[in-house]
Structures are given as structure tokens and as C-alpha cells.
Figure (spheres, rainbow, N blue to C red):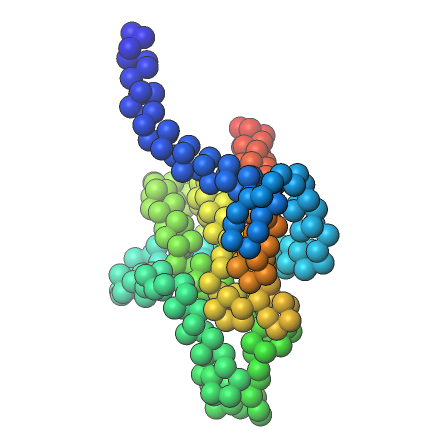
Length: 292
């Protein structure tokens, strides 16, 4: 009996050990570098304690990038959820050409994010970009707008790109959730005289809650660490006005040669994501216990 109980753990042990090595070893290396006196070549010359962390926390660029990262993450995740849910509801219905529509929605997911960002950079060019040409043709603009050359328009456009590239994955998650809802529940709601909105609010939305939670957590982790959109379009400019934490980290490590500070910032970012995930899961489980 004891052997049967231990067998699942023994079978899972090799994979678990490998996962721990893959996760814990880089964290340990970051800790060593982040608390060490490191030269530009990555050589640790001694222990510096929290000096690297304090240097990062005292940098005004860090505070600006942190606030911008919060706007970046919340804006894209919330915008993606609000757009993807109606799209998934439409694609879940049976209509002529549904298969083609699903392929069109999912197709951007197959394209490299870096290539997508580069295409958008071309489209947003001030002199020859497609967006300016289209808006001038429609009579919306009289002249060209330098979309990526000024902070007032560069970051909002990057937020829009972030939402657009996040839709395919989120729609896929929501379609899986909608497919798991038994059709009998909708039929029973209709027989009880429930309106489409009432059926959506009392049947569809509660049963979709776990899938919404998955989409929120995974999108938050993905968007928080998203590097290509910012870097390929503006490189964090103009004047660092579009830097988020991940691009600020890249500049610290590979442009300014502050590898110790970059490692300390990596640990801060890891702690923020871990804190968010634990807090969000705790809040969801608490709400579920209340509802039960």
C-alpha cells in the first residue's frame, strides 16, 4: 500500500528535480551577481551586500520605468480581456465561415513578436508609414504625425500593439472555456425564460471565471516581461520616455555595463511577479470560498 502511494511521487521526482534545477540555479546566480561587486565582464570580485539594489532603487529612471510598467501591464491585460471575450463569444457561435474567421484571429500568434513589432514600426513611420498615409487619404489628418518620435503618442501606440498581439492567445483560452460549458445549461436557462443577457450573466460568466483567471495570470507574466515591442519600435526612447522595467534592465546590463544592478533588478522583478501571482490566486480562492 505504501509503495502505491509513493509511486506517483517517484515517477514525478525526475521532472520535478529538473524543473527545480532550471528555476533555482539561475535564481542563485542572479543572487550571487546581484549581491556582488561585478565588473563589466561579469566577474564577481567580492560581496557588496545590498549596494546594487540600493543603487537601483535610488535611480529616478527606475521609478519612472516601474510606474510605466504598471500602466503597460494593467492596460494591456485589461484591454486584451475586454476585447477577447466578445471575440471568443462570436467565434463560439455556429456561422458560415467560422473556421476561416478563427484562423484569421489565430494567425498573428504564429508570427514572431519581434517581426510584428518591426512591421508596426514601419507602419508608424512619420514620413512614409501606412497609418499616416491611410489617415491622410481618409481626410483625418492634414499632415504627418511622428507617432514614435514623441512620448505623447509613442507609448499609447505601443499599448495598442500589445493588446493586438495578445488577443490570439487569450481568445484561444476563452474558446476552450466556452467549449467546456454544457449546452444543456443554456437550454435550461432558455426554458426558464431567461434572456440572453441573464443567461450570460448567470451561466456563462461564472463558468468562465477559471479561464479568465488563467488568462489574467499568464498574460500578466507575459506582458510584464515583454521586451520586443518596446525595443523594436522605440528602444525605450525618446529620452527613455517609453522604458519599462525589462528594457531598463537591458540597458543597465548591456549598454551601461552595470551587471550587478541589472541582476538586482531581475530579482526585484521576479519578486513582484511572484507576489502578484500569489496574491491573485489567494484572492480568487477566497472569493470562491465565499461563493460556495
